[in-house]
Length: 471
Image (cartoon, rainbow, N blue to C red; front, side, top):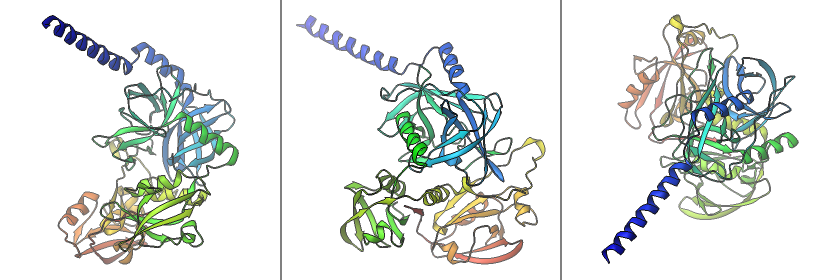
């Protein structure tokens, strides 16, 4: 009997060890030589994408078609600015912007008069937690940079990776052990939201789309290659991706619940009699936890589809049906600008951008002071001087939340804050220290520069935290 129990225990132990071994092997990295071959094979298809709009926005792109079509992040999306790509050998070429998808935040370019090898296409079908992957990007020095790790989780429209994202790698390719494209990097994933920190400039004066300071539990997030190809086909044939549109402005309350703040005339929301102040609890029975999820649920539906919204209207629960319209391209652009004002901030082209002594690069920080209804951008001494600050630095008003305390107080986009409550303010930290001691419904006295003239105004500190968006 004892021998039988011992044999059974040994069998269970053996099976467990074999199971653990198979799990480890599933996530095992290729040999170092094989990784070098993967990088060597894929590198000619990886490019650096740049948009010039006074300053320079930078990302990574990957050639997906032999005719010169490049996939990258939609955060590179230009308006009238110059767009170009640079390969890992430093060769430059102009490119046309084809379009972007506001839901996946993938954009596509077409390189002019230059042959670039297309990357080998793979499939994300076999991906599972533990699968080995690597991701490539172009460094600020126009060299290939590589990071590797394993897949953390997989869903139908995205997968998370436990790899480190270095500045400028958004839009870069995610490769399998065969060197095939299985996904496109979109950003760092934290909690239930994609995380795009404020940009840090790197020589020579470019805006990459992540900082090294990622969230403690953040993971890279990628869009599967199958979705990328579907979006590319639609943009190539139609010039855009057709996404659902409701026609509302939204905000979040202190619990991140979505509240309708504005309804556009003759929009699907208007026709469905949705009203400002309505609190959206569910869409098609699915609980809505924040503004990003609300926008994604709308975008995932096609124009013409009908959705059911569960609404809390002054304590009364309502089921409202709405037939979605087609998201206008201008509205999609505006959504990107609202979500990422630090990246799409337009600066004049004659800014005094000369390097600082010692080779230091310019840095910008962006902070959302939701309870004031304001987004502030930390300026360099050079930019502060340009905006009329006589000495030192200031905080540029990059965005105002409609109807927020700052807008009500008369603050305007383009104002530069140089003082608060009688104290000199030069950095976001300076202002944060002053605000820490503020109580609800207390006044904040600001000294600002507007059109190179000093002004003073007061803002009432509110207890609510607002986050504006549109859908």
